[in-house]
Each structure stands twice: as structure tokens, then as C-alpha cells.
Image 1 (cartoon, rainbow, N blue to C red):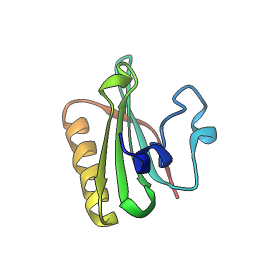
Image 2: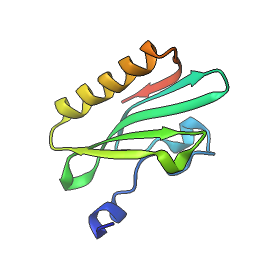
Image 3: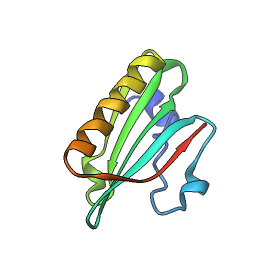
Image 4: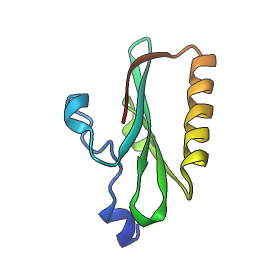
Length: 100
């Protein structure tokens, strides 16, 4: 991991905190999905000079979480929408969401 990535931690590094405490000034959109007893969080955050991060965190296996970096907000939001659409098609429902 390069130093830029370390300085700009993913916005979901406090998974056990209540959602309102996890939000940071760089968080833009965060949706949490539920399928039976499983939770999945997908969000978009400003990630410093490198652009925008699309973060996917499966709470049932956080090691499988991903961070995708996009240069522009539109591409990041389109990716978030594609992921959300796929989850909904697979039977997941929205459990909570935040936007700024």
C-alpha cells in the first residue's frame, strides 16, 4: 500500500461504530444493504488528490472489502449505482443510507 492510500483511509474503517459516528467530512453517499442476516455497505467518498473512492464492505467478511478509485465523481457514482442495482437484483434490500 502506498503512503497516499494510508493517509486517505477508507471511510468504513470503524465498522462497529454507529453509522452517525462513522461519517466523516469526505463521505458523500453510503448505502447499507441487508440479505437475511448479512450486511453489505457501499459508499462513495472523496479521497484526497487521487479522486473518489467507491468502497464495498461485506460485514460478514470484511477481508473481502474493496476500494476502487475514480478520477471523477460521476464515474464513482455510476459505479455505486451499478453495484446497488446488482445487489437489489440479487435480492438485497436497503437497510439504511446517508448522503451529504
